[in-house]
Image (cartoon, rainbow, N blue to C red; front, top):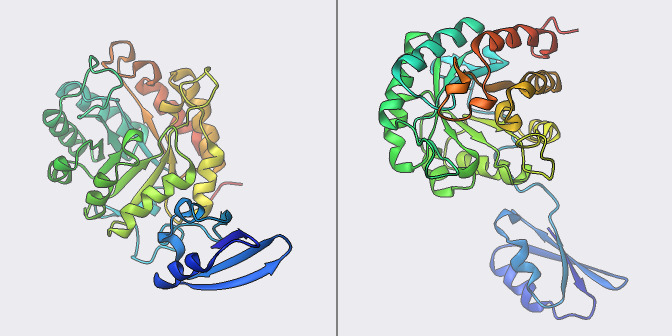
Length: 332
């Protein structure tokens, strides 16, 4: 960390404070400023707190604030159940926004499996903007999801809302999803960090890539390194889609961390007519997979029908993605 101070400012108190915390401080004077080079693991130092000291003009971090996510994977293959994720890339997750009934999720599971999906998604505890919207079948929905996934050889993926439900999710699903609204729910992240289940961590729609990766850091520092990052679009001024799909952010995350990064084009688009193009662009850019909403009768869906593909259209999309798949050893 570099602290830029006014040349004639009093800096002994700040230096003493840093020394007490175990940091070495080296001083370089020149021009109108004095530079304090703070040596040590400065991740725990709050730049804003340092800036509040009198005479401090600027605080510059000299390295990324990650201790775990940007290191090479050291704990062996990334397993989902007993299968290595590397053998399934690109990893495709598909299913309805919400589990609406046993028959509904069983039908979708059969069709997305036939299309080539690896995992079945379905919301049981639904965080909705309006309290009057469908909130999910909760525990019953989770059981339907589990049974449908098992019946068709798929992994089950669902979003957790409360850390108190963690035992239920550990029993029912293969991958626990943290939604955009909970990306910075640090109490939940700490609990999931102690879980034995892989976590799918969605980027918040108003969060930077750094904030997203720091949320992954919470999971890793508490013991869980099986994390799939999911870019799902960010809120911008552009109203033509629900959110703006940030493929640059996806690539930045891939270049910064060893973690797999997938894309959710459905929530970015908010419109099924945009999903296929965004999917192809994501895979061509190097995404490690996709999470796509699929519903047999989108116009009757209890949530997010407008962004859901019908099963036949989903199957056609997956077939088309082979031409863009950089994970394919035959890719030109």
